[in-house]
Amino acid sequence: MSETQTRSGSQVAEFLKDHPRMMGVLFTLCLFLTQAGNVAAANGGTIS
Image (cartoon, rainbow, N blue to C red):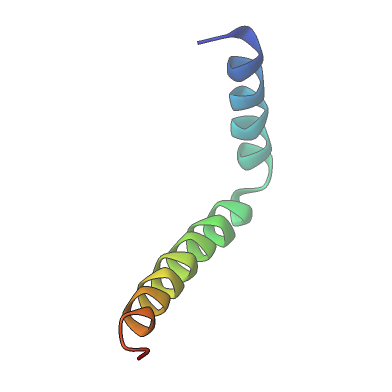
């Protein structure tokens, strides 16, 4: 892993350590995007 990737990863980890509620926000956003992707894929197959 390059030094830049390691540094940016530690910056993200430090930000989340300083703002713990943001981890919940990011987790919820990931869940929402997963569900939205599933809905889009399901609806994409039914268009004729």
